[in-house]
Image (tube, rainbow, N blue to C red):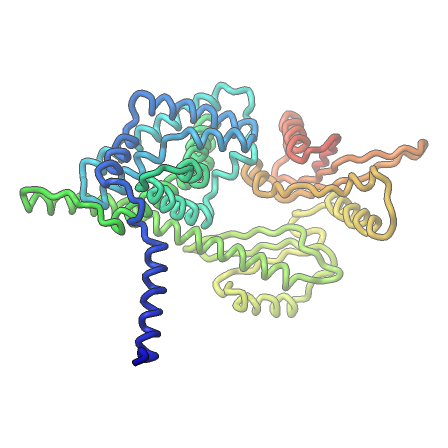
Length: 449
């Protein structure tokens, strides 16, 4: 007698289900639980070699950030032992081991203080005091930092519970980037910049908490044995202490992570709104400022040049904010050449020159000098915003200069910047030198009104 169709189908589904479950089973190749716990506890200590390794890693990372070398920073992250105490805290929470939680917190605090102090001393004595792009990138966390910390932590604890160790742990150390924020915090202390310090500590805190959460989740999924006490009241007391510590760390991080997500969504929607709704032939957006505030409401501040938009047109654009999920966002538009002195003729001239050279290059074959003038310049708005808060707007473009009495042409990078307060001669020279190095310009001319 042949087997009924529904039984064959059910058996096939069970086979597929078992095959998938076996393929994703984390219990396969799992190391002995005691060995995993002992290894994590050992790495959570910062004494002897671990402490010296941390100091050397901090110095290497500080040098890498100082000279703007990505390779050196990556090398420092490979050396760093900072993952140890964070995973120890996650393991302690998952196994109800209050002593391990206290040990992890204590060692993480000691490691953080030493790291910030060492980096601060380095940045205090180094002759290079400019904030490079590698350093500035660690002053403002984004939603991607949260995701990287969480998934990196999951990969780290999964690799840590295997019999055969792989190269996952070094990769996690690079991805989660715990070392650079601490060095940036040290730079903030050495330079007296509170914004750098708080931004870097904020990023470090977010990374640490989400690595800890991912460690806790895997420990509970693998059903590591919880620590039990002979006295039932003592066990309840320990559990209560752990829950208090977890709440103090996790609840603020969840709120901060929500703020990061909300800010990222607002900025993406605002950029799409500007690019789609301000496509005019004779009017151009020359400056944009996106201000996020969960309490006061968001704001989009735009500066336009060209033909002025009519009030009815602006009202029509403003009514479309809701289509981009920007209902509670204020749209501020300034236009005209005298828009609160936010723009000057030299800036307009530089913008016109840039457009002229772009159109000219598309219409005919150009010389090598002209072609080199069209090399795209990096976007340094975020760096200038941090380094020079008084800068209101800037324009940077590559131009070709032609000597009238000779048939010789040359290229230079022209930068026009507008500040709320005039810069003194020393500050002008410092800004010019930084722009020349950051933009990779052979020759640079800085124009300040």
